[in-house]
Every structure is written in C-alpha cells, then in structure tokens.
Amino acid sequence: MGLVTAVTWTIAALIGVYLLCRWLSAGGLRGQEAKVTRFPVVLLLSHPALAVSSLACWVAYVLTGSGTLAFAAFGGLTVAALLGFTMFTRWLGGGRHQRRAGGFPVLAVVLHGVAGVTTFALVLLTAGMARLF
Image 1: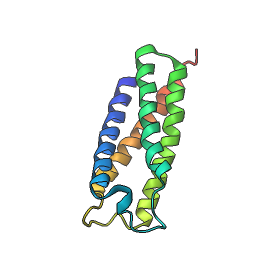
Image 2: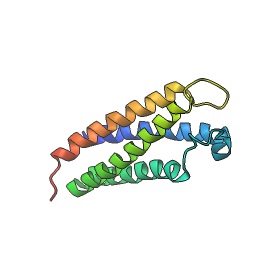
Image 3: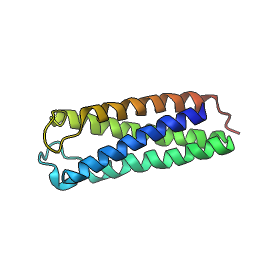
C-alpha cells in the first residue's frame, strides 16, 4: 500500500507542476489582477514545499519501514492539503474557474484535487497501521 500511495502522490505532484507552469506562463504573481483574491507568496511556496518534503519522508518510510517517518509524512501532507484547499477556495472565489486566456484548466485542477485527496486517505490509512517503533 505504501508504493501505491507513492504513485498517487507522484501523480498529484506532476499535475501540480503542470498547474504551476501554466500559472507562471500566465504572468505568475504579476498576473494576479484582483487584490482580494491574490495568493500570498508564502501560500504559493509552502504548499508545494511541504508536499514535496512530505513525499520524501514517505519514500524514506517505504524504504525503511519507520513508522515515525510515516507520521511525519502524514503531518506535512495534512498542512499541505489545508494550504491547497485554501488556494482552491480562493481560486473559486476569484472566478478563476471560468475558462479564459491564462486561466487554469478545470480538469487539471479537479484531477490534482482528486489525486491529493486519494493520497491523503491512503497516507492516513497506511500511517495509522504503521508502528511508531
């Protein structure tokens, strides 16, 4: 189950990289027109940073079987998921879900979210079964 989780996590990460590239090609921080829905830089950097570092902990857990690493990955993924949900709700609130030039493709956003939720559930189940020692 640990390997399946790593695969779903990698899928979510690849779709996230695609979304990041689309956002950067549309102007990135300079392209955010509405001040109310502008994404803070800390949010934009911490979501992928936490997700990638938690994925590294998960890969280390799969290789070593250390329950502590599984729980560290779960903790980091929990915070990354909350940050991702924050970005998603701000994206919806800003009308970015409508198709227009430079907008995010809705299918990619949905797939990223589904892969993220699936990964979160698998990490929760696997870490819950892992021993701490």
